[in-house]
Length: 196
Image 1 (cartoon, rainbow, N blue to C red):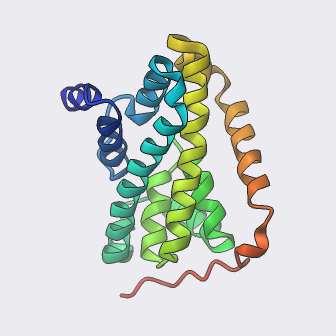
Image 2 (cartoon, one colour; image 1 turned 90 degrees about the vertical axis):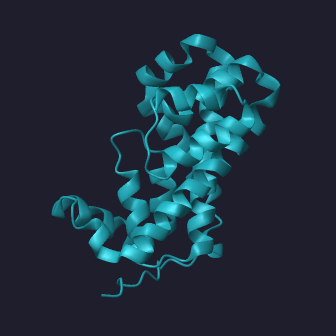
């Protein structure tokens, strides 16, 4: 996988798109798109918004694939996960599926992002809401990481690791502020039980 990532990295922005897609579809790559976003933003700071956009687009496609797995496989695809973790994820999605997916897109490892995506598919979350939540959350995350890459260069990963809690909180406040126009998004999540 390291060889694949290095090959894709030589392709620049198209490579970043595919790294984000593969990683989000459930095939983790060492360092993932986060490191590539910081590296490309460091090398070309003027392209920072484009780098974040390309990474978010690739991640959205990858997460859509995982969503389809959850949608087609239903609870069978989720049976191997711990029951408590499954119940926690379902509770968050039923409270506000859109916000839960946005938070999952910003959350650091070991946040169970893949589990949120599989459940969103299994419970037939609206495709429009799902794609908006994934692309918005990922764009905010990659924009923040790109800024760190442009600002701190090769020390960006170290800064991110040391201050991830604060950075994630700031990103979440930005997202929540954006979502204050909540009248656009109904309060109920309208999730369905998967078909047996």
